[in-house]
Length: 157
Image 1 (cartoon, rainbow, N blue to C red):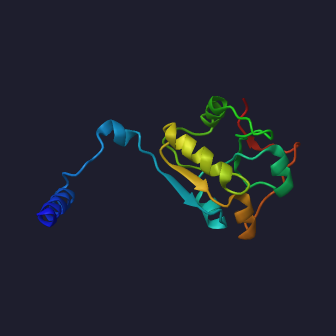
Image 2: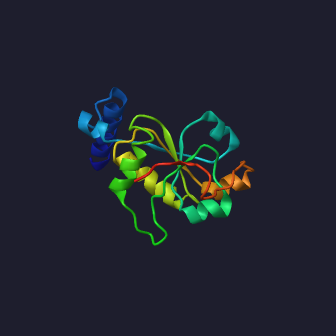
C-alpha cells in the first residue's frame, strides 16, 4: 500500500511539473529575482564594451595597472570598511539599474560579493569578473598604468 501511495504522489508531482502547475513565484517574487553572470576577464570581453567597474583600491590599481576605459570606483577601503549607499550613489553617476555592467577586483572574491549586492539592489544585469585582474593578467589582457596625475574615469563622492 505504501508503494502505491508513493507512486501516486510521484506521478502527481511529475504531472504538475509537466503541465506547469507546479510552484511558480508570484510577480513580486519574480521582480526580486536577479541573476549574476560570472565571466573571465579577456581582451574579447573588454572589446565588447560592457562598462567595467574596477572596485579595487588606488594602491591595487598602481600595483597592476587598470583596464583601459574601466571606471575606478573603490567599494572596500583598505581596512575592509565600505559605504554601500555611497557606492551606489557614485555608481548611478556612471550607469542605471538596467544597463549591463561588470565588476572587477583583484582575485574575484570582492567582485562576487559586490555583484550579488548590486543584484539585490535591483541592478538587472551584473557580471562578476571571476578570477579578477589576476586572471586577466594570466590571460594576457592589455592593461595601462595607473597614476594619480592621469585623468581616469572615476566617480567622485
